Length: 105
Image (cartoon, rainbow, N blue to C red; front, side, top):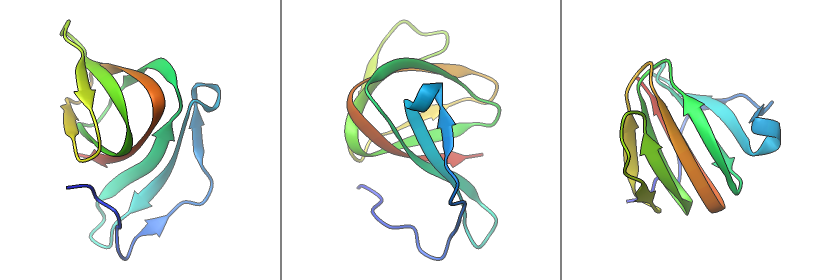
């Protein structure tokens, strides 16, 4: 199931822009203090590093991703989620815009 709405949140209106504009996101804080980001990755091949554990949820578009320490590329489409451990990384290949929610922690 695709998350289409996150009620009662605080959102930072200034975007975080990474990789020369290939990834743009906005931080979101839920009433209970839980942090997320909502964003889009434009067509590209990028590597992201993580500090905290992350769950990447696809809400539109698609991507292929490969977690650090693995050789296998996996597909992610709307409704799919993938888990990335803390202090790790993942590669992402996007051919059509990949819209996501990143759940931290």
